Image (cartoon, rainbow, N blue to C red; front, side, top):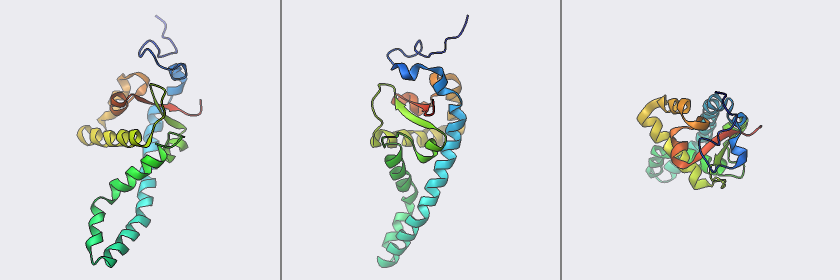
Length: 159
């Protein structure tokens, strides 16, 4: 039996543009590299924000230093909200790897969905370690667990 070049038989009702198999070539490895780039960017963004929090801690006689405990997640959430939730629907790492997050219903990815997508990734990663990538070997469109839960898919933006 010959395999079809579309995924429409797996999930009916998708928009035609998301049915093309070529949109998913190399997505898994590109997602891993995009994550590494985004991780580096968030780390670099933490430097100036940490300096501001340190100065705030001095001004408030140490009270502002409490923010250091939540600084990483706050910077990451703001980064994801402003990049993945933008009109481009991609973080800077995803843009570098020519990837874009799409909703299966054809709607636009808003900031809250983008943040929820990232939070679910971190929760699943915390519980299952990097084994969450195993789901991409069996799921349609190389989707991860959080993609399946939210009705999203990551596609190649350059095709």
